[in-house]
Length: 227
Image (cartoon, rainbow, N blue to C red; front, side, top):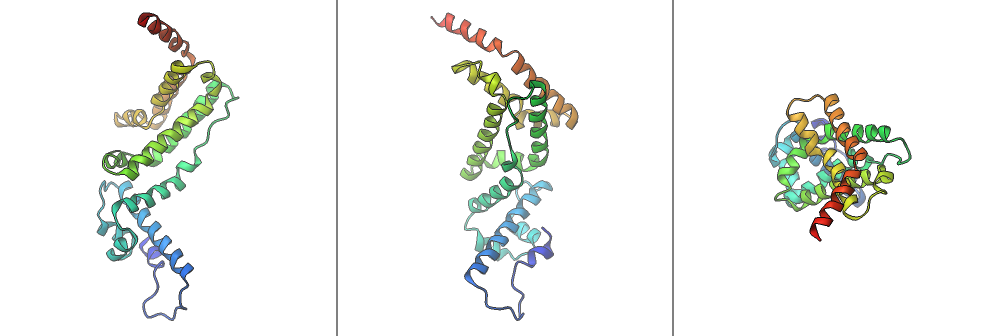
């Protein structure tokens, strides 16, 4: 949001504005909170890993006082930022229909993951550090991991259905690891292009799904040794 747009959220000094209703004040307050959260996200995306309240206010084009007026502490600001990111990215995560052929499903799931990670990467990297001390960010990271795991469970339901108990869990863990942000980020950090990264993750995912019988065999062997 531009500074000019953000300033339009505030009443004009000395203007002949009509008395504002309670609903109007609440709506304006919500717009200001969102503008501040968007400013923080924008600063992180631009490379500021720990933007100050002053920088956030400057970027949003509002006074520093408004930051402390609308957010009693940093956790409430994080909650607003989580809501913004949820609307922008996370609520669009959908399972791929499980009745399609395996190769197509793998390609669609990996493409959607890579597109998501490309968009959220700067904020996600910062969140990983903040999550160690922020209950809000830690909880959101857990929710996002669960959402992505559920997408895998639904998209590859027919393959997972062939496994039970520990074997099923291990296969889902393998799919989860292959398509995780950490795997994507490690490939990007060593200079792999977006296309090459997508191909590597497709290979990992397809291999886990087509060689999943090994999970059952190894499980049986382990159980035999334990007896």
